[in-house]
Length: 115
Image (cartoon, rainbow, N blue to C red):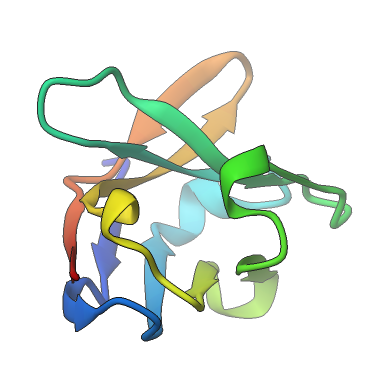
């Protein structure tokens, strides 16, 4: 069964930091592209950052210089280090894996940034 489980969300003041983790089932992680997305209330889900199996990275303009995506293939995990958080970063954050054209999503973790 395909599973992605996010953790690390919470409530933080503006300017603070959080680190999100996403653990994937061993059978699906491999070297597939992974990504973090987020969805704020009343808004569409948007890309935050992606990382390929080879380590190529892409960030949304809104998080460049503040967020860092990384992966540990040995642990079947992908991470999102979020620094200098802003209230507009408040959203549910989702981990996504792409395998053979199919998207697998985690259940999401809430990040709330207070001003």
